[in-house]
Structures are given as C-alpha cells and as structure tokens.
Length: 314
Figure 1 (cartoon, one colour):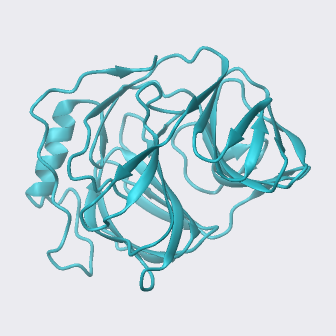
Figure 2 (tube, rainbow, N blue to C red; figure 1 turned 60 degrees about the horizontal axis):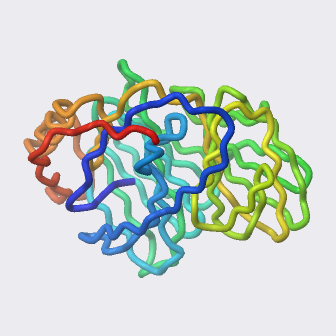
Figure 3 (cartoon, rainbow, N blue to C red; figure 1 turned 60 degrees about the vertical axis):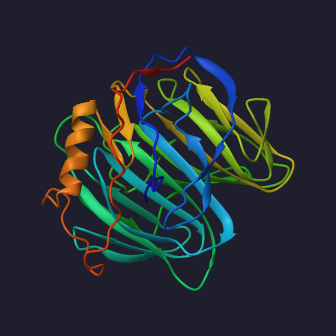
C-alpha cells in the first residue's frame, strides 16, 4: 500500500480530545495518484478537521474499476499498512522476504517500524479491482518490522449484521492481527430490514464508511461515500438497513501523539521525515531490498521548502 502522489501534501496531524458523541459527515475527496498507477482514489482520511480516528491515520478506497496496479518498491516508516481487497487479487512483496497473494476476505498487515519497503501488483490484465488501503499509526518507541497475512478472521453476528473483525476487538471477537494500540477495524455486512445494536467502548472514538447500500447509524441516514464520525462516549451503535449493505467500522482510543505525515512516512517531526526521505534516496540499508524488481523503485518526491505546521481538529 502506497501513497504514490508525486506532490504529496505535508500534514501534521495534531491530536485533540474528542468532545463526546457526535454525528458528523466528512466527504471523501478524489485524489489522482498518477504516475505508474494512473488512477484516482477516494481519500477518506486524513481530513482537515479530522486527521485521525483512533490510530487510523490514512484511508483510501480504490475502484471498482478495471486497471493494472503496478506499485514498485517504496518505503514506509512509523505505521502499519492494512490491505483489504474487496474484488481482485494483489501480489505483495517486501524487504523482509515476504511474497504472497492476497484475495478478498484476507488481510495483509505490514508493520513498518523504523523502515520497510514493499511492492504491490495486481494479478491479470486490467483486472476488476476494488479495495481499501489504510494506515495505522504506531505508538512512540521501538516496533520491529513484521509482515502478517491472515486468511481466516473471526466473525461477530448480531441479528442481521455480520462483522468480520479485521484488526482489534468488537464485543469480545478479536482478530489475530497484531495491534499496537487499542483499536478496531471491521467489515459490516448488513441484511435488508435488519436492526442491530452493537456494544462499543465509550473510551473509543468511532467512524463508519458505507461501501454499498444505505444504512442508518444511531438514527442518522448514511449512504455510500462520506465518512460518518461518531465521536466518543457511546456504549452501543444502533445500525439498520433498508437494503443489503456493506460498511467499514473504524475505532480506537484517541491517539495521543502529534503525527507528521508526508508521502509514505509517519513521524513525530519534520526532521524525522527528512531523514527517512534521505535514507530512501541514498539506498540506506534501513529499508532493505524487495526481491524481483532489480533497481526499479519509486523515487521520493522533493521535501517541501516550508516547515510543517500543526493541523488541529476543529
């Protein structure tokens, strides 16, 4: 998973104490990635007024569309990449030696720690693709780079709602994926005419994105497209559907740190971003080698000429 934008926006994501239960809509924005992929994605996070939901700090939806995904080796720091395909297959290779194929219903989770590199290629000639690419910010301290693939994930069922727990826990159902902060990410499949009340943690903030269909969440109608931010302080989420629907639930303890995000790096300062970029451009051993690509890789964009400034929740 990558941000291959050739001119990425510099972002400092400043934490803020959420103010209890809310129901705020944040429209996704279309972002043309250009370059080797030449496609557009719907970027859900970060938002100017909502940089994070728990530790979730980046969320793109790509497709459905027929296209070739050819993302050459590129670096990451300070995050976990969560790859969740809905349609199509993706080949993942990384500098730890991983070489796997991921299919819908399976999870690829790559923990960058101080540095890792990987590539992603779709399978087939302009295959149909639809999927989600997310980042989870890592806490301060040493986290070792790792890669996990989970082909079987736990289910939580409540009436006509079935949740696949991608990472974290939902009402006692816990994913085997490694989480470094209290968090949840789940795919919700909701049957037409169902009404469910999901127990949730009041210390978590939550948000929901509808992929297909229409639902109501805590009494608020929600169609596919915008992110519904629900804040904190809730003990349950009432979800109903007038038609079959699919949605993504994100949640977690509000992240305590200020995060500087630029290109494919998550850090705590401008200086850390500069060092990561310089190390990638110099071929430092920090990021390792992704086998099978020779010398081909994605070069880092130029560092902005201005220093990062805080972007705080409004």
